[in-house]
Image (cartoon, rainbow, N blue to C red; front, side, top):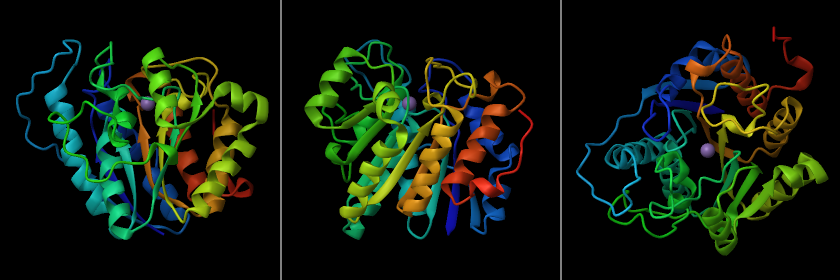
Length: 306
Ligand SMILES: [Mn+2]
């Protein structure tokens, strides 16, 4: 497999600073070497560029850094479209607002190839607010709504070339959902497997069902992995910790099943805030999870200091 590594050093969408250092931390933790050890061709594209900002006014006075995030969405949309032409792009966030751009770019690519794009959203939060419904105003809370064509982004974020059908989105690991998001997710028809569903059924059967749907639809699959999908006990380097997240083995199992499926065509690694990490353990865990997604088998996983 050929992978293109695209840095997305964005922190304006989060409530605290630090995610801008995410791409550096993932590189320092050995992401590129880990993928090359698995036999992949890895091309480092460096950092994506933000488009020029323009003045934007919105009735929701809570919105923060709207011109900056709109400009990043434009720049990352273009970078994602180009990087997905001949490779699997891996986007190194950056806060989760980067996924507004990465999904719009890979969705445009999928539409041109005539295949449906599916999205697996691994996150404690659905990030399904619109510019009108977000009360915090932090724009890492809106990318899934934007990329799936929910209303209210017109004239602010770039026009969406190919909205992702909400029926092809699976949000997995949720445990913090605002009322406005709950209503919108239900109305849009997004598949939601929250932590209770994972507790009751286990991660494997839920993942198996979703993977089977992607395969049956001859789909492309974008995976968006937010650090807060993981339990804060194993992944402390995130500004939005929520207790009760995925365990080490649940997370690896999801990655291993995705690897077996052979269906994943693009990946976001987001919300890593190295300023909050403990001796790089969260960055190292993200590298190991990415290696599992790209083919590392449990029998050849090295023992790590922990
Ligand atoms: Mn998120």
